Image (tube, rainbow, N blue to C red; front, side, top):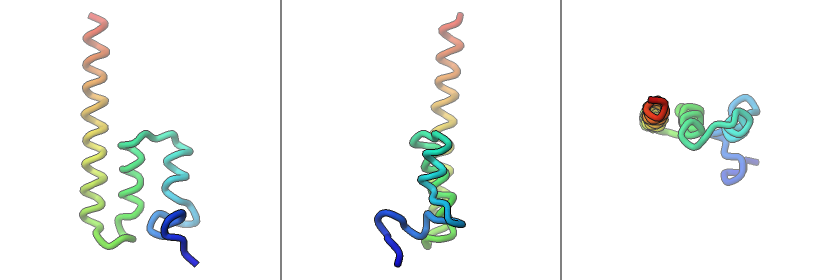
Length: 77
């Protein structure tokens, strides 16, 4: 019996749930969502949309890190 609230099948791959990977790797919100959307892309009905969402979160993470890097280097000057 599947449990769509606590253990949705579209987040379980090979007995591993996306949330377990996200927590074990200590990923934050954006990178956690990248993993989540990539993991479910072929399992929940809208693969292109899920991959676009993953890309959106990845690009946001990159922009944040770039801004943080610029801020940290500016403080050194």
